[in-house]
Image (tube, rainbow, N blue to C red):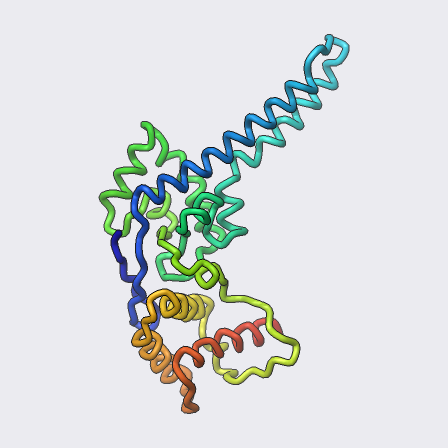
Length: 245
């Protein structure tokens, strides 16, 4: 298991653990088993409904073929769909405790997931040798798709925290505290979220302290609040003001 450091827009590095190769492999096996199981079920269902038909039934069979093709679409978009809706995780990744993040430490954008998905075939040619070599030899354990998309695969020790996104629901009576937070970008907020996740996993209070001081300086905030609580308040305020726009 290796650790990688990601520089943030606040000139502070976040530290993440890259998963062991066997963990990524088991995630792939689980996803592969799910896909194959789905194919077998669909194939058997269509065999059951399409047997014993004559030439007179050709329009019916054409319709069944179209439906069959449609039902096989989930096989092709499996990884893309689940990584988008499950914030960087397929079912296999969820079970094995790994996920995809952006190289800036935040959640990937949709186009990054799309690039990973489109380049997946290049990792699987020659029995998956290109993907294996790039994961083993690259500094950040990235496959070709990760390099093209600007993403990483990391371990998630505390999944309830790492799976949270920047945006979440606030109580109706929530009162914002720092209006200046809107001077920060989505990337900045992803960085702050990454720092909070990092603190939750590794109890790295020093990083939270340094980045909170940096943010105070950038936003000219003189009011003191405990560093972790301050960063959490910024996230809440950002959500509040974003929903007002």
